[in-house]
Image 1 (cartoon, protein in one colour):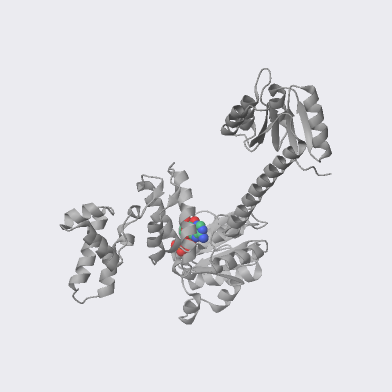
Image 2 (cartoon, rainbow, N blue to C red):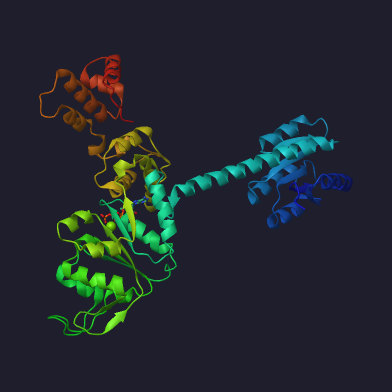
Length: 454
Ligand SMILES: Nc1ncnc2c1ncn2[C@@H]1O[C@H](COP(=O)(O)OP(=O)(O)OP(=O)(O)O)[C@@H](O)[C@H]1O
Ligand SMILES: [Mg+2]
């Protein structure tokens, strides 16, 4: 039978212990009753209790002392203190010390039941809240990838489904959108997670070497091939190979790749022996492969072989709702790395981030937050910790006016913004520099809709 809760009862009087225990047990609680604080602490070390009910006055350790020490063992434990009739001052001090409530001797059981109900309901609510929060955070995060936008949510669902299969995956997205991190997540969620993940950046390896990097070569296959060499596909056997920037590979290598995808076998360069391998291929590209096919630079048949599962990662500017979440994710990451305690990002700073187009996508946001964490001095990351090109209002004005000559008003707006930035939002100081009244500046800030740096 499920009990209503677990109670630890401490009283030095046998008769109180017995009657209370009988009554609480009959009411559906599980009760352990002991006669002093030392025994109570012993029990607490080994068993979880929901509520501690303790007499205040006991020989040796008194109820207050017991409560304090019990909290150290079980921080979530709530305490009800039993006091003598009429000793209101000790009741008050019990509550001040952190007791949930007190009851006076002799007490009526109903009052105890009401208190217990209250405590248990409250802790149940707290627990539910924690679960809810955890669930919410989980839905916005898949492994270490965060995103609440509909686009990223559907990417999460897709990779969760396809990760356990051996299907070939093509990840398309601009630079910095997360192709790498997604490829690794697919691997780590697959049955192949304990087998190698071998990334190879097809763009950074000279064309002449790529084929031998991937497929290996026999001794003497070409000038410089002084000994036999195994390729990445052989090393990756049983595991996963990640072909990054697959749009860059030459027609020759495309041909080889097609064969391995179709027949699951290959020959080392300069060799005759067919070697079969079991390798899952994940490829990524920041090029539009369709365009490359049209231009005759990429084989259409290879494209279809690679594109069994297609994952399109949208640029960050098309999923701005992910920006605050990502910013906080990186804030946490770099606080740990640089041993800093920055708990939040100011609204102003977030406004700037939300307005910025992020041509370098998530990587750029990550770099910005890393740098901001390094320069930030307080507990809140502020707009002044962000780079100039994000907070600089001058650019906005230039963009707004183009090449035409600015009006006096525009110039004034720009100048006030610059001075405010210089004074870090201090309006009095700005007024002094500009030689006008504080109110004048305030009115102009309002009129021009300027953002005051914080
Ligand atoms: N959704 C995300 N959640 C958390 N971190 C992310 C996310 N997307 C990207 N990142 C981080 O941003 C950085 C850039 O991502 P990644 O290297 O995966 O991009 P990429 O698309 O492979 O870029 P490139 O085309 O330049 O190789 C990495 O540090 C990565 O961990
Ligand atoms: Mg990459």
